[in-house]
Length: 409
Length: 175
Picture 1: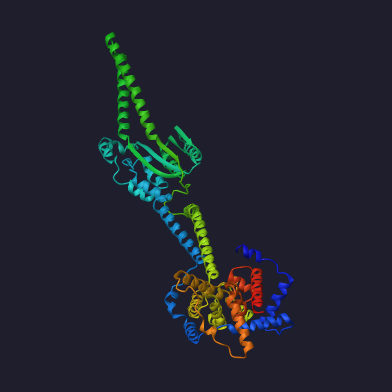
Picture 2 (picture 1 turned 30 degrees about the vertical axis):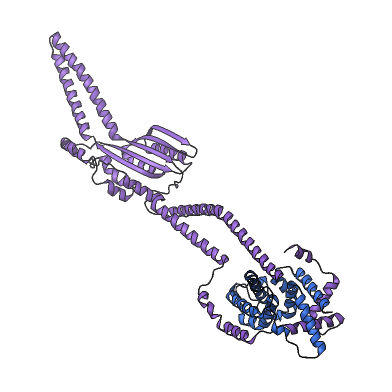
């Protein structure tokens, strides 16, 4: 609306209103009631008489086109044109589905919690020396470990253990003892857990709690936190009989990224040291008996020297035996907890896709979709405004040119 | 006629009106309106045909909330006519409108009537194009001021003022 239009856009004065009303009455076919109406009626009649009638040829052509539906446009009519208002929701829906598919595939393929854990496990070399399968600790291991380790990992871990050959070499010397006494097995576990941001302290507390719960203790710990992320390293000592229970509980504190278990059969060493200790004790008894029967001072001095040496040997062997017994009775667990962004909270140790996982994935999809929408909006809104402005300017320009064409006619 | 059409073509937003009924109701008036704009009967035939074709093609996009079908059709015809005027101006093939032989034909009747008609014809020809358009929309097509406002893209009050001004000029020219 230009300036002249705005000036015209005023309330009519009564005379103008009356004349317009009279004109409307005349155009409606009402009989003239005054001089003005009569004049307007005559003017309308005379102007209408000037109206050119549509040529017959045009009339026939249009009649045919209208009745046939303008056949020249049928091909175009087969492809319905989508208006912007209809196309936008369709495009938005398609984009949302595309985003969901891409994000979901990303979650399942590489970023999912369970799949990540499985792939990490498959890459992990698990050295489980299970030559001491007959031992008390070893016998309980497979069943208890199954709670923490997915079945497929157990399948991968069981064959071809690296310590099998070592166990085989130790077997002949220990064979005579294997049936007489339980085997002594040293076990060690290296466990790496991942937790979400801000969960490091909870996980660390959980590690201590689990350790104490199974009767063990924290031998060493080191926690390094930076903001909501960080890492913690623990060296735990737990009773070997409670090792698998401890692993199962620890695995629930976060996502298990790596799990290495190693077993070392120390039965032979234990037996050897035990035998040496028995020999040393027998030698001590013999030396003591010989000392009681010694006659000369030289003989007595020599026996006392041998007894002193024997005492040192006994102490050393006792120490070795205690250390071996400690290795067999107390397993070592090295736990590393890492708090990282993008790690979903742990939801269990099973390998299946649980409803919790589905909910987390759905939330993640929504988060990513919202991010995409925000980024897209940041780019498209200014672009859309520019396009809208261009369209408005284009319309205005075209309209102005059209009006100018009428003025120039 | 306007009310009848409005009622007949007042479906919901998604409904389509009956195009053929619209065509039957205002084909002659639309042609007269286009002639008043382009002032060339041959061009007016093409423009009228083009206007109906465009209207048919866009009939599903008609939105009754924005006006009546007649108003919508006349707006399409007006744009087509103005585009034709622009095209003619660009090509510069017609610097002066050719004399319309049909308009020059003498009317049957007595001399006073003939003189009166000649006066009206001359008055119409001397009107500014915008005023002549308003007279055509009001007298030939019988559009309401609201419909004229929709066709011209102005307010109804503004359309009324313009109509009054054009009629006054015509009355003065004919007096």
